[in-house]
Image (cartoon, rainbow, N blue to C red):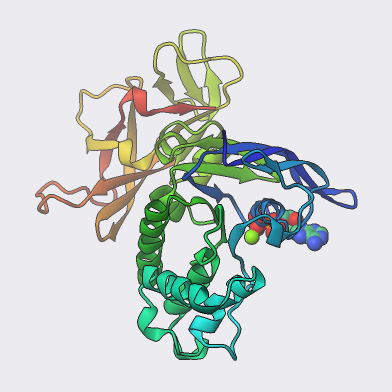
Length: 354
Ligand SMILES: Nc1ncnc2c1ncn2[C@@H]1O[C@H](COP(=O)(O)OP(=O)(O)O)[C@@H](O)[C@H]1O
Ligand SMILES: [Mg+2]
């Protein structure tokens, strides 16, 4: 049985539908990320799971228990929400103990569990500090300890790392992932950051305009996006408008023709996409024709980005194409330069059609 089960969960504000018939099953111990642009309904969906907002329609179940109409404290979910700040006048230990007191756990038992929760987030040595005496990352960890101290069935986190700088975000999210799998906590993690979702989640739920666009593993979402929206939202993508010709090639609006994998669906296709890291550039030679999948282009821009180099090349029809190359090799004598004529190609199996 799923640990969390949503059936047609919908939220309306007057005539505005902000979450539209979201259905989803999350397994015991699974780590799921809700990912999507700002305003797509991630927080609202999570709030309905937490009980902070009531669904207009549909149902929310935790295991066999229908919690749709229960208040948050009867759902047994650990919450880290924006605006759920630490109490500034209470020590770290008191902040963490608060959830236990609400659940009538006190005395030595409460003390033991507070220390245990703080040890899990590696903050037991700071139990007596006030929140303002902690760094941002430490405060986020206290919020996490406060959410897990009463051993919730599920952990619901709304952009819990957004206030942290990049390095700290990396650290805390690794800690979070370790903690989550150690405790086997069923977790939903809301983020608008695709890197974060790809790196922590077992499965990603991509949302757009109140609806679920795709549910899948990070690999599935990245390699087999179900829609153009997902392809463009997750990672960088070169997209060409056009259509499939009777001969089985994709012809762009600008007239380029690309091979497509055998056996792909052909009707209703209006866009062709290829990821920047799939594209290989070689120097154009006199004998190069306009072979399908081999695209003559001119190097326009080269941007060094540390681990990789990004090149912008422009096709004969004027389409820009972004190409990424890993910077693991030593610099080579025939590095492309702006103005060079090149041939871009890619494995036809790496292409995506929408
Ligand atoms: N209390 C509310 N009343 C009216 N509209 C709301 C309310 N809360 C959220 N919304 C709207 O619902 C949509 C989804 O919001 P939200 O769930 O916060 O998105 P996300 O977390 O994905 O950024 C937004 O358009 C937002 O303006
Ligand atoms: Mg939000």
